[in-house]
Image (cartoon, rainbow, N blue to C red; front, side, top):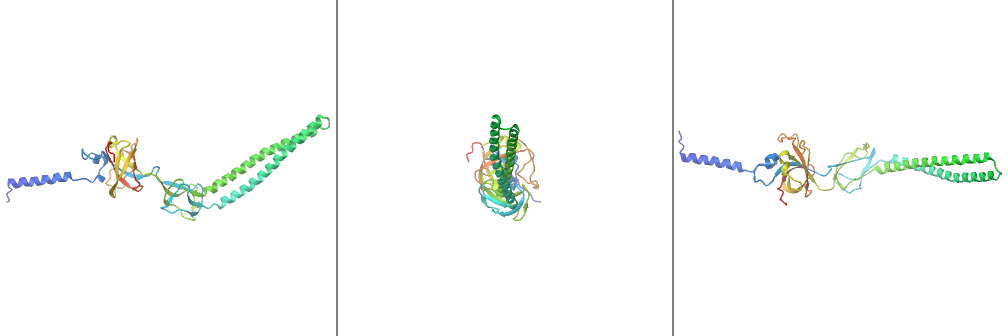
Length: 311
């Protein structure tokens, strides 16, 4: 039987105590902590709150749709291309539209010529009526001739009104065909980068069908899920550090733009991740990144700095 001396027992107890203290002081991985746990882990913590989030752009990715149906005739851009506002992205086959435009223009020309002829007829009919009225007043004309001339003038004026309306209808058809022809050329609504194309040359695209996804040019933002218990600690204008959950490493500066008023489920986590506890009591906190190094959709950890931080 081994005898343990008081000195050895005391040394053994001190060793166990020291190991326990070292384990308690070891740094924890903040990326796996809930926002409430990370913020409350130490009274002297450098951050007032921690939250998960995703990188985004104001308004999100832009889906560019075709205003009319037709075959894709050609593409002018490839995924990854940077485009400016108004730049041609794709062309829809517009042969039928051009045929309709030519036909409408021909009808417009005919209607305009008929209108010009009626415009010349009305003054002549009015002048003849005036002459007959003068002759009747002088006793050299008949009342029947005056009535006939008056009827001719009235008929010409009515036809003039009808022809003006007919010309307006044809002009509207021409304008509509021109709009359809212009819509067949798909242009970038904003400056940005082409992310994805959904169709190929020769494929049919339905009216208002999505042709491609466009990442608008502009500042990156972060949509962070702010836990209910941390809302009072975060204020608009606060500075924050943003790091990638997967990569870690580089720290990106950010500033709080707004704090939501409506609670809801977190949007920055994957529901399939069994290690993440979904808590419906979060609000969306919007931050603007100082740089655009992070990618849209990237999962990040947002570490909010005290209000007096100037980083």
